[in-house]
Image (cartoon, rainbow, N blue to C red):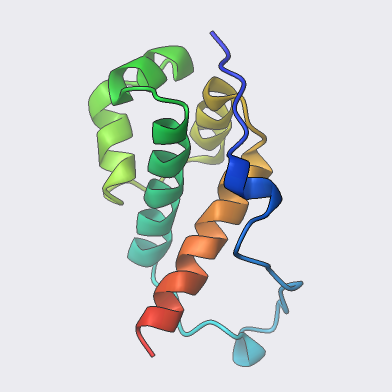
Length: 115
């Protein structure tokens, strides 16, 4: 079951990303730990899930994943495979790139908070 979803804020997204310099020595983000990336992806997933007015259980069923696994992802407790990221995006009716973009926005927002 695909649920078409576009966050209204996405078109006028407050997070404008510049092209990323792949040289970590010149990165505009401080050192990003695996845990911070996992947490940022979880927040992005939760934002899209709630915008779609889906429960964790409904999203999990649509993505053919376990509900507890989805909860673990949203809490930043799982390192999600690209295959499962794709399943989740498809279940939400969005492109995976949209979830990744929101994850990057979450990382940038958090880096600005910690300054």
